[in-house]
Length: 284
Length: 205
Image (tube, rainbow over all chains, first blue to last red; front, side):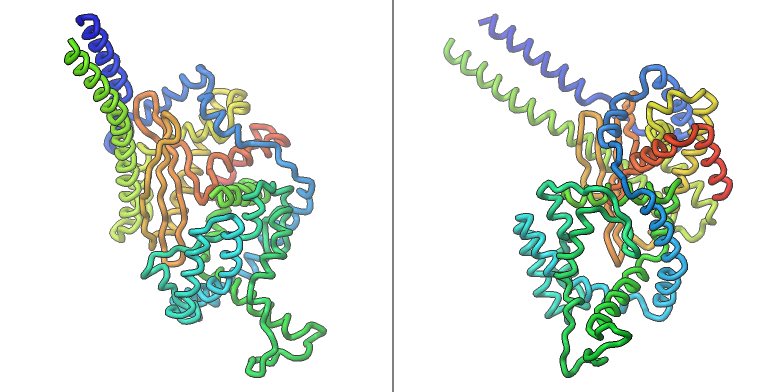
C-alpha cells in the first residue's frame, strides 16, 4: 500500500508544480511606473538584438509576407494617383457640400435604403457559402426593414431585434471556395481591386436593383428615349449610383485622409490594406 | 485493502479532473485580467479624448502616458523594419529609426482615435492564441458603422502583457509598415528611408 500512496504523493507534487508554473506572477505596468518601464524596455531591446531578434515574432510576420506578384504595378501607381486626386478635388468637396445640406439622420436613412436594396447580393452569397443562419438573418432583416423600416430607410431589424447585416459579395464567395485574388488591379474611380474581385463586379452589379430601374408611366423623370446617345434608363442607374456614392462618402469624411497618414508610399500601402482586409473578410 | 484502493483511484480521478479544470480557470483568470487591463487603458484614453476641459496638447500627453505602459513601441519598431534590415543598422541608426518610427506610430494612433471621439469603444472578448499571446477584440461603434480593432498582446520576459500589434479591420499595422519598408528598401538604402521618415516627421509637426 505505501507504494501506492508514495506514487500518489509524487503525482500531487508534480501537479502543484505544474499549476504554479502555469499561473506565474502576473504583473501589469502601472501608469506611474511608465517611466521606469520604458527605461527597462530600452535595456530589453538591446539584449534582444544580441539574442537573435525576437525570432518568434519574426516568424509570425514573415509567414504572411510573400513576394507580391504585381505585373500591373506601373499602371496601378498611375491610377492610384488619379483616384487620389479625384477623391480630393471632386468626391470629397461634393460629399462635404452634401453633408452641409442634408442632416445626418436623412443621410443615414438614404444609406439604409440603398443597403436594404442590396439584400439579394448578401442573401445569395451567404447561401452560396452555406452560411444558413446568416442567410436566414438577412432574409429576416429584409422583411422587417422593408415593412416596419419603411422601404428600408430605418433599420429596426438591428435596433429592435439585434439582427446585424452579414456583408458578403461574390468575390468573397469565390475566395471562400479557394479562388485566389490574382494580381492587384486599381480600377478607375472604384479603387483597389484584384483579378478575382474585378470579375466578381459583374455578378455583383447584376444583383443590385439600382441597375434595374424600368420604364413605368409614373417614373419621374421619364425613362424613355435617349440623352446624348445614352438611354435614359442607364442615366438613371448612373444617377442613383452617384447619389449612393456621395451619400456613403458624406458619412465617412476624413477617414481616407486619416488612413493615408500611415502610408509612406501610397500605392503599395493601399494595395496591402486592401488585400489584408479582403483576406480577413473571406476568413470570416 | 480493496476499499483503500478504491479511495486512491477516486482521489486520482478527482485530482485529474480538478487539474484540467484548474488550469483552464487559471488561464481564463489571467486572460480576463488582460482584457480588464486593456479595457481600463482604452476607456481612459477615450475619456481623456472626450474631456473638453483639456487642451489638445494636454490630451495628447495624457493619452501617451496611458498607453506607454500598454504598447511595446520599440518592439513594434523592430518588427516593422524586420530582422533582415534591423541587424544591418548601427546602434545610432537603430536609435534614430526607433525614435522617428515610434513618434509616427503614436501620432497615427492618436489621429485614428481623434476621428472617433463620438464613438463608443466596446471591449469584446479576449482570447489566447498561443501560449504567450492574447488578442483583445474591440469595436469602435458609431451611428454609422462598427469597426473592428484587435489589440495583440504578448507576455514580456518580465511577465507584463504588452501590445505588439494592432489590427484595424483585419489590417495589421506592423505588417503594413513591414511590407512598405521592404518594398522601399529594395530600391533605396536604409539611410534614405530614415531620411524620408525624418522629413515626413518635420512636415507633420
